[in-house]
Length: 152
Image (cartoon, rainbow, N blue to C red; front, side, top):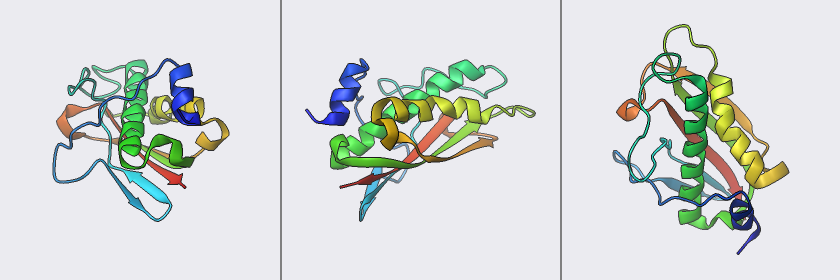
């Protein structure tokens, strides 16, 4: 077991099965030394346990936990493509938050994903980031996360 998978185990985390695409795309693509994931929804065992807009039926803490799940799903997509232990560093994370009008806590929600990257990768998990509020997300998901990592 390599360093990142061992760290997941230390954290008591297990990579889920890669979420099946909901349209015409693949979960992750490698080009050169970079892997880009597609937007990952907070699927758990193939279903969305939480739907709706943040600041409305979904509170910020629930959405933050969902963002963490999205990030774990992104790691699963990376692992399936190149092996998680080939990751050198997390380069960028982009998070989308389905938000009610007036909700401005998107950065706190997406911290759920960013914090997971730090827990798993340490200093190599420090990344550039965008946290964007949007009107709707696929399947009424409250959050979606995509990740770019550098690999060896």
